[in-house]
Image (cartoon, rainbow, N blue to C red; front, side, top):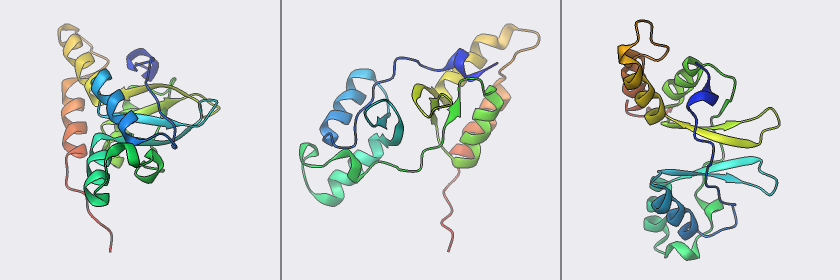
Length: 154
């Protein structure tokens, strides 16, 4: 199974210059925990999570409308491509300990997002298949890897 078969296509995005309140609003309205950050034209330049927003508001002691997304967004974004097999996306999630992967095309333009939830729901749907393409065991192993405590290299 390919990433494009499970990914969400209609993804809300924001720009680095927008206030964090805009990212928070999108997360609330779309019931999601992250928003890809794109520059004009759609090239992915970062990602911001609900945790990034909370920690930034706390450490800066400012309201969200006074903090630009660029101040807290992750610049190192782990992605996958539409044609990648789901197993490759799971491998990235395990290794990088992320629950969501923006999906880009060959030009680096955002075309969707794939979450561990998407993979888990597909594994659940496929339980009755004799030869499922996405298995519950793989989802459990990916979740376990993602949930491991981060080790800070010294």
